[in-house]
Image (tube, rainbow, N blue to C red):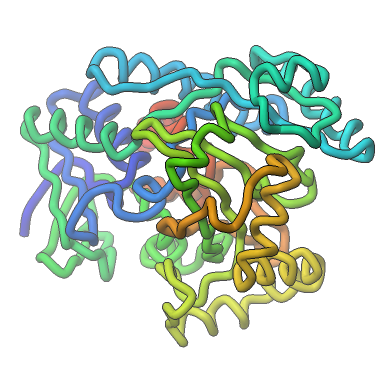
Amino acid sequence: MTEANILIIGGGIVGLATAHTLCRRYPDKHITVLEKEPTLAYHQTGRNSGVLHSGIYYKPNSLKAVNCRTGKQMMEAFCEREGIPFSHVGKVIVATDESERPRLNNLYERGRANGVRCELIGRERLLELEPHVHNAIAAIHVPEAGIVDYKQVCERLADGLRAAGHNIVLGAEVTAIVERPGGLTAVTTRGDYSGAYLVNCAGLHSDRVTQMSAGQAPAQIIPFRGEYFELKPEAWHLCTALIYPVPDPNFPFLGVHFTRMISGGVECGPNAVLAFAREGYHLTDFNARELWQTLSYPGFRKLAGRYWKMGMGEMWRSANKGAFVHALQRLVPEIQAEHLEAAPAGIRAQALAPDGSLLDDFAFHETPRIVNVINAPSPAATSAFSVAETVVDKLEEHM
C-alpha cells in the first residue's frame, strides 16, 4: 500500500490545479493524484475549445461568476509565468433577430454586474470586428475573452508536481474508497493508496466516486456529447475570433458557435445530444448499463419531459449536417457544408438533481475527510485555479 497525506482522484485541470494549490499551501504534505486513463487531461479538459471565458453569462455572485472572474486572472498569470501562449482575441455575442434583443441587453447588464469589460455594439462596429457576420442586428463585444491550450497547462502543472516530489499515477481507476480511523484508502486497478484526506475531481464519474464514500450523490451525472466541425483552411477567414449566439437562459448550453483556436484553425459547434455512454464520444459508443442508469433516473425523465422539443432539434443537427450548417449560417451566412470537416467530439458532464433541475453552478459535497467536486462544467477550465482555492479552503475546515 502506498501512503500520502492527501489523495486526489482525477487528472484533469481541476484535479491538477487542486494538487498545485495544496502543494503551495502545504509544501510539507505529500500528494498523490490518481488518474484512471493512460494520460492526463484525457476527457473534458483535453476536449474543449480552449476558451478563456470572461464570466459574462453567469448569475452575479454565483460560484461560477466569482470563480470565473478570479480564475481567469489566475490562469493568465500562470500562463505568463510558465511561458504558455494565450491570446485575448475577443468575443462577439450576436443577436440576429429583434426577439433576441431583450436577452442581449440582459446579458450585457449581467456582464457589467460581474465586472466584465464589454460593450453593446451596432451592426457597423460588429462588421469591423467580424466582417462575415452579415445577419446581425446588434452584439456584445467582450474584448477580454481569450484562448489557450488547457492540455499544455495540465502538462506544466504535472511537471511542477513531479518536480516537488509528488506522485501522479496513471491507469489507476478507483473502484472503492474505504474509510478507517484516522484516514482512508482508495482501492484502484494499480493497487491501494492511503491518505488522511481525499478530493474527488473525477468529472464524468464524480457522482460514482461520491457514492463510494457517501452512499449516494446529491445529483447524477448525465453525459451530453458535444459534436464539432472544423473549418477547412480556405474558410478560416470567415471567423476572426469568437462568434457566439445569444444563449437561451432556460438551457445550460450556449448554442453552436465559432472558436478560433490557439493552435490555429477554427472550430464550429457544439450541438448537445445525450450520449449513450459516459465516455460516448462517437454515435456508435454504447454502454447498456450506463444508458439505463440515465434513462431510469427520475431527474432525467423530468428533464426530457420539459425539453424534448429542444432535444429533438439537437438530435436532428447531429444526424443531418445540413441542419448543423443552417444553425451556423445564422451567425455566418457564407458558411457552406463543403467548408466543414468533422472534428473530435467532447462530453459535458452535466449534474442533474432528482427533481429534474440542472445544477447550473459549481457544487460540492463534503464528509469529514473528503471533498467531492460534484459539478464542474464550463467555465471550470478557466476557473480551475480559483475552484482549487475553494476546494482547499473546504478541505482546511476538516484538516
